[in-house]
Image (tube, rainbow, N blue to C red; front, side):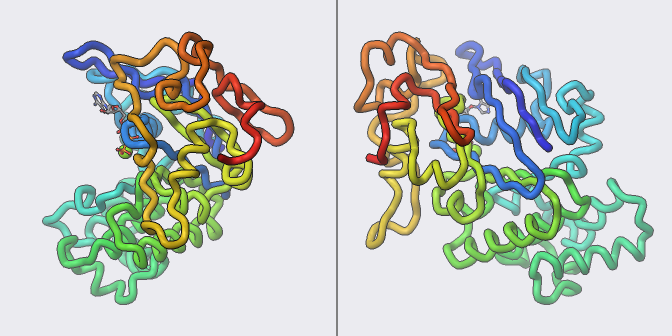
Amino acid sequence: MLRVNNLQVSFATPKGVVTPVRDVSFDVGRHETLGIIGESGCGKSVTAQALMGLLTPRTSRVDGEIILSGERLDVLSSGTRRRRSGRDIAMIFQDPLSSLNPVFTIGFQIEESLRLHTSLKRQQRREKVISLLEQVGIPEPARCASAYPHELSGGMRQRVMIAIAVSNAPSLLIADEPTTALDATIQAQILDLLDDIKRQSAMGIVIITHDLSVVARLCQRVVVLYAGQVVEETDVVTLFQHPRHPYTRALLAARPSAGREPKSRLDEIRGSVPALDALPPGCAFAGRCSQATTRCLEDSPPLRTLGGAPHQVRCWYAENTGSPS
Ligand SMILES: Nc1ncnc2c1ncn2[C@@H]1O[C@H](COP(=O)(O)OP(=O)(O)OP(=O)(O)O)[C@@H](O)[C@H]1O
Ligand SMILES: [Mg+2]
């Protein structure tokens, strides 16, 4: 349903042009949840912004194809994409407070989104607001509709954002770290809600996260990004049982187990991601990889398909890394 081909995003900065997303391709099917994981700065949010059409030609350059239900979105004007944003692809963010307008009630803001994208009459919109709030598990929908954003808890605000996102039945929902700002119990409830929504509609979902437990809980396929490139893509079972890229293996090894911190941050891997303006000539992960050879330092490996189930890995030695370390 969504096909992204060779997506590349560059920004002009005072230090020169940087390219935080480099040749990224993936698909998302109907009813499918794709996870995009990787450390801070690896290009997850910039990828999402490019899919949403939020990057303007004035400050950025976006190359590659974005195809939704057979239609090329990347060739549409930014005005057209803005008008259709929320209907083709909807997005929810880590911090719902920054996406909600503090001076309008929740009901008004959901209704506004319906007014923009549907032909519902005023009374129908009012009714739809209440049913959307019910659908996202808000206990007193009428009261919530007349409340202002600051009067709700973080979890309730995120439910409201999900209600707005699904209000126009988008083909695709992108959730960028949707639960990072919430405490553990509320996180689990929001993940359950996203899972329910996926079951009830044909929508595809892209979940951007640092948290491997979110991936295990919700996703069927996973794209691992490193320094703006896809380094591994596979189904979730293969990812956890037979990861092939040393970076993926390091992420899994850094995962908390019983008795350790319940929250998995991916920044526990030794060393750091290379700066965008100082990418090495070879493999971007070589500087942190315990198995790197001279070849890895000199030649950048291509993304290769391994035999069997669709499994792609960007490592010269993917065949040699059989079992998880
Ligand atoms: N408008 C911009 N101009 C220049 N550089 C940018 C711009 N937006 C993002 N970047 C750079 O692109 C890189 C990728 O950023 P991005 O926000 O996609 O990371 P991320 O993977 O979402 O990280 P996090 O997990 O911290 O949210 C970063 O180095 C960031 O500084
Ligand atoms: Mg981000």
